[in-house]
Amino acid sequence: MREADVTGLDMDMVSLRTTRDTLEKDVPSIRLEKDSELREIYQFGRKLGQGSFGVVYEATHIETQTKWAIKEVCRPAAGSSKVKMLEQEINILKQVNHACVIQLKEVYNTANMIYLVTELCTGGELNQLLRQKKYFTEDETRHIIRSLAEAVVYLHKKDIVHRDLKLENILVKNSEDDDGRINIKVTDFGLSEQMSGVGIDNIMTETCGTLIYMAPEMMSGRGYSQWCDVWSIGVVMYMLLCGEPPFVSKTKAYLLEEIMSKEVPFNQPIWSKVSDGAKTILTCLLKVDPAHRMSPSQLLENPWITGDTNVPATPSNVLKMMREHLKEVERTQTPEDLSFTSSEDTLGQHLVPQADAPGTECNHAKTSPVRSSRPCTALVPTKTTKQSGGSLQQDKQKNGPEASVTPSTIVTQAHASVKASPQSSAKQRRRQDKKDFSSGQNLSCDLSKSQNHRPFTSSKSKKPLRCSKANSYSE
Ligand SMILES: Nc1ncnc2c1ncn2[C@@H]1O[C@H](COP(=O)(O)OP(=O)(O)OP(=O)(O)O)[C@@H](O)[C@H]1O
Image: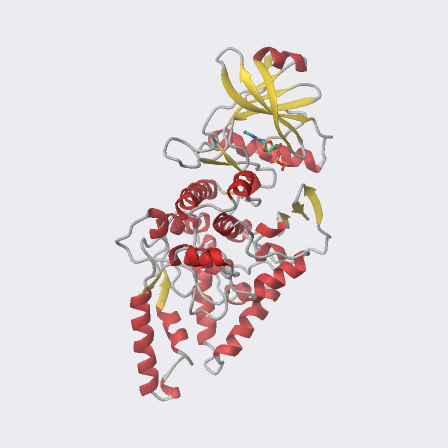
């Protein structure tokens, strides 16, 4: 047995892109002459599961008698897409060190095999637990979603977009710990992407992931960013609370149509028992337009998540008062006096998305006629454009002008474009919103006018979808 190159894997198979200074922990990569040598280090136990790459076993480290999971992977052909995915997965796992992300302990290489030793999650996949329980309570869901959001904030800060967040890729460390809490670990980074640039460089076009969890902007093929993970958190949360996905259709095209045409459905009887706070979050996470989605950091600060009952779940009272006031103003003014046609627009103009303002959340979920037409960030009646918080793009904004292509700036510009057409009725604007979204224009039109912002990509790949993993798509 010999220690492999200090950077990690068998270099003939994997060209590591990770720079060493980004590593947070040292994951040894060990070369073995024979596969049987590993059996001298670990005692293999029951089979835990099978993925598209290989089989996962429970294993006991003989010397320490500690339990681990070992993924046994047949070395894929050099240059194949499987190599790329495995390389990506290992590179990312080597960089991450978070309580809610699966830990990679060691990598073993032999001539034919690669073995990934990870922490053991005895509770299995979250979808198995959901199937048993049918649905989770709000308290259970809160704990799981908080952990998931923490993991996503951490990953996005490291410029890692998971791209395939789903119940099957969330493992349960132990069924339930002493407090009855379900501790989760995000796993399966095979489809993840690590961004290297800022602004437009962070726009991806490859369609991948699992349909029911896939963000509409990814389905539309017009470019997406890390906000696709937020949509998936929304789908996961929805499923935890009611046991079923929010949107289902046989094909990607129909699913996209369904998402575009419907509100987040809360029709099943179970939703009558779910709090408004949880439903509001879902509406904010499942915003069609990524520019209007709640950020993972905002999610973490939301009173439903923090359990802070002193903060109103929705700032609807203030907004309601402002709307009433604006309606009154409209009533007393002639149309010429107004720069907008409706109080909603006027309100939109003055409401600036303020990232990470605690205690605030999507406040328009119920009033918004079109799910994609309203920003879903903390709205405050001010023109201050404070941008802070943990999301990748918000962080990037501090680093350069290009990075200022944030959902919030897009939102602000979207409002500006509404302002520019005072004649348009609310109905016309709704139609335009939808048209813009399907053509990919709603984000690009305004951005292209700005010196600092390059257009949001709208290139649509003509390549057919293929299934690269079980239930996961890659273009
Ligand atoms: N650390 C672990 N602890 C417990 N069970 C695990 C662990 N890792 C994987 N498993 C189980 O083994 C199964 C196969 O895992 P694996 O990572 O190979 O594939 P996958 O995530 O299902 O899909 P793929 O790699 O094909 O995308 C999982 O579905 C899970 O049930």
